Length: 92
Image (cartoon, rainbow, N blue to C red; front, top):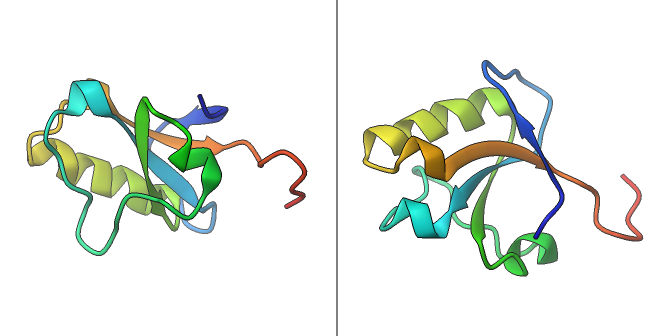
């Protein structure tokens, strides 16, 4: 499980990157928002078997995209906007 801080709307600019976290079991069939994909280049995301992570540039956009995903049928309880804790040994 990835250490993540769950963020609350409304969000803002310049505060990313953040992730839309999708709980796989609850989400069922889903797809990322246009122009985005599931994050496979961050080992923290790949190792998490419970969630998929969609990297987004800031919280403003993340909350908008999460709402779009809800409109397309992804259950609200399957979605959250999160900031991941830094990977061990990585200084940001």
